Length: 348
Image: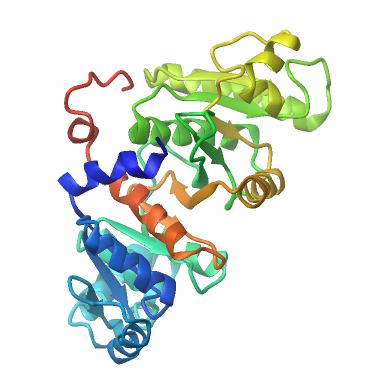
């Protein structure tokens, strides 16, 4: 079964509030309507209320159960500005600048999640990745012990048996152009934690390259080899029951027959459910190639390494893509004990 139908009943039992900074977008409206009809909680749409209502009327979208909020008219703006000033004063931000900043919808949304008015934020539908990411990275703290913020894409296949029952977790596909070995190790562990949280399966993490356990001394291969070693050490130190292998070619990571033919033997070979790419070029190109040619559903970018659930979605996302990213972030906001109450938590 694809990932989304497996997650929906869990979220219905623990509904969440999700904020969408770009409320006056037809895809956001449609995703918010689906959120309500699926009984997943309360979507909060930021923007001019009149403009959103006019768009909803034109699209015949029922706004029942959807909260509309205009940051320019919000009673919370001053308290958010004061909080933002506290967070950014060391970086030189004045209170006047903070007051101006919270007028930006993405900044306001980040402050909502920081002040527990919502559980997650989904941004990026109508703005560049850098503009959507900047407030999230500046305002939301890192997870304890995590230095690197990155992102993952979830590719979900309706029928193909690959990864975790048809789901692949791919990173980093949207944040770091050329991560170091140290950053790649962080990316591997952070992505594995989210994959486990969503599926309760042991993460089988492939550190990808153009060679599998080769002898090449090419810098990108050496980087993935070192990243594998570091990721294994960090997972072990954190008592995380992860399987991590590298460097691996993509076919050896996903196809057991090919892995055997290439004499690659490990719990990951041919069975990987998490793919870590050497750089942003390969990660971004790779997931889009599979999404558009293979027709996989794609949900993300899901940000990893932050202490609050957040996603930076593409301007090319469909309403279904937006809804899927919101579901993933909503599930992240649920404690594992509530997600899998009858199963032993095998990963610390």
